Length: 231
Image (cartoon, rainbow, N blue to C red):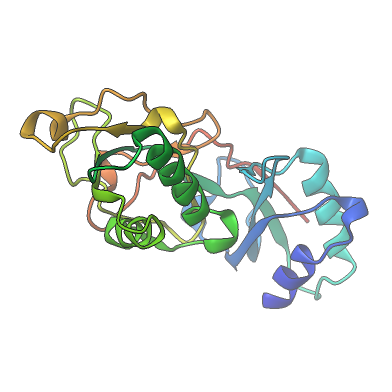
């Protein structure tokens, strides 16, 4: 099955370009009503002009289906489906050390968050640890940030809910954080740690990690389509 994966990711660009793909033996509990079982399921994602993950177009998946058919082993059947994008939909609060410009530090902090979540740094089924992101921000900003925390964006969430989020094998992380999702505060208090006033980030085509994603599991629902094509 790894051969199919390699060929999918190296498909000639004239047919379209996949950004990420994952293949596994088909699980019966993933089949939709009326869907014909296949031996393998290939989960795919593409990327837009901003290099953000997006669902592969129907045309791209059809081209992939045709392209792989010439390499298919007798007895194999492959169902091509959309993978799940898990948007780390959190807000950040930072405190800044004296003599540093708040706006400049905020801008640099956003740059480092975006760099950390670059799609080339992540693969399917990985786990997000906030401690690693925090250490990365402190390392890259050279001492200008005193503290950085992620805080709930929903009233029913608790501080610390998203400090560890695990993706399922067919899920992959992405962050669409903007400057509006980072708030500079003078100090961290029990009030501003309960819920951030910054807007929630998340898009219709993604699952936004929430309080149900705490500790060892990520949100299992998704707005993205799971339907696929098989051959």
